[in-house]
Image 1 (cartoon, rainbow, N blue to C red):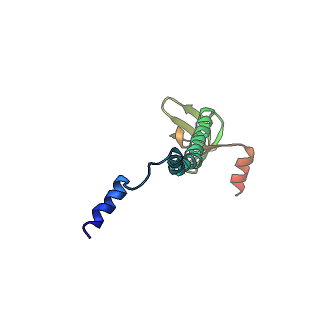
Image 2: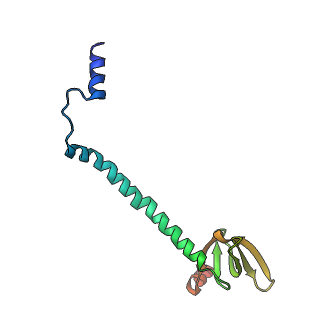
Length: 122
């Protein structure tokens, strides 16, 4: 029994009794890892990067009188955009002149006429 364990460990650790791997065998061993890496990048990293780019473009194009929806679910109209401090002033209720300040990054979407009417009816 003591002879069996060291010889098995030696064969597993140092590759005793095996021919050297050919370049084709090495490629076949590495290929699954490369495929997993490419799949992970395609399925996880790329869509998130595209979503962040769309959000940055949306915030860069934000202007006064845009109807917006915040990530907290607050609907409002942009009264002022202060890009230096990262704040947006929203008019929430025109009749009572209610305004709130929110972080620029909390703007989830800019509503157009069709989106706004669908949101208010549903």
